[in-house]
Length: 280
Image (cartoon, rainbow, N blue to C red):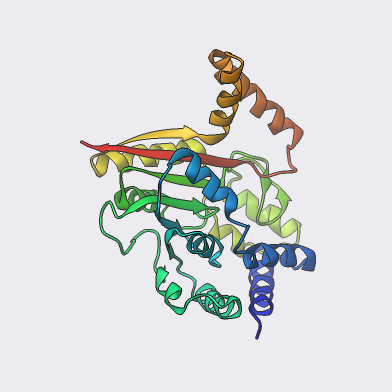
């Protein structure tokens, strides 16, 4: 079976069973993205290069269908990936064979969970986690492990949904902020959607993540600095006009506008970079 055919079959079954979605256009769009190793992860590396110039040894947690790991390897990075789902490792082998990647690249993937990473302390320059924390068993433990394996002077990039928003990106449905699970179950049944996907979701938010980061850093005797990437971009623009003193006001006003413009239409994200400053 060709890699994309295998991927589409798995995505179709998984998305229908968990979220009640079997729109072929949606599935095909996701499959195209995960087949695109040369371009789909470029924005993630742009972020890493902006905040952590010179980072080379990078971990993708979780590596999913391999796009980030393969992009990094194709561009000279010392990439590694962890992923617990075995079918995704099988897909990665099929894709690597079709794309004629070196056989040894498969050794860069580990079948394990983010709560117990198989690496020594301070092993990586950078850890990246994209649309993952909402699905793990223990987000706080995963963050602790990411901090443990990142060296002083390195950093961690985390992007994931913020469940204070009014749209659920897996079900593709309007959603209440931090929707209580019991009410959400009744809502999904009214919408003729399965509830199994609900049990796979953690209601992560930016304040929760920042709290877990600070607690984990203390536990590992490390100092951290958390940067909101969207706020940083706004501040960069304001600095050019010598208006950085207004960055907080403009940032909150900008988000206020977006929140109401896309209410019940679009998922909002946490997008942060965590600098590991030093070992105490």
